[in-house]
Image (cartoon, rainbow, N blue to C red; front, side):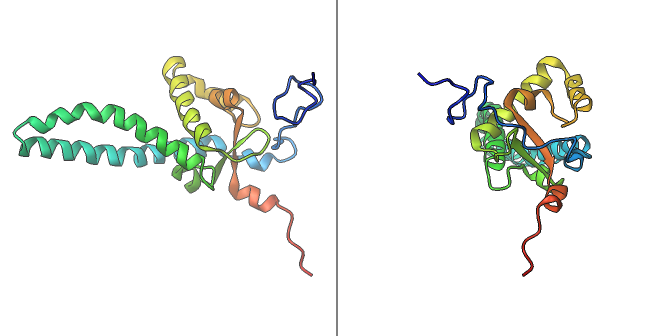
Length: 181
């Protein structure tokens, strides 16, 4: 039987197979400058992106209800579950996409990565959104203060999921230049 910390399966018991953090806030502090404020603005942008289709659906159902003399208003019960599904698909597909960032995060030059540097994937994006909303709902918005007191600006759901959000505008400058000869 192999020791879990010594194999390369990705699972670890804290032994010799543990990978170091890909983003060190002491060697690369630029990656984390302004991340907290940028995350807040990105969240607001994402709220607008999520709200637009929901608002259009509500307007459509309201007009459809008028045309059908009130029968179409029965569709209003679909708005809540459809909104949740839309949010999960949005976060999962954008974080799981090639940029590892939602539209708001891309506009704010942010990117979500795992603690060891891998890009996001669909399930991680969807679970990231669920954990965020649960932490905000259960622990109040004061849980966001956790990001102020750690060097990587990680929030509670980032710690739980093993993710980190980095400033991509700076990261592109840290990459080694290509050969010029």
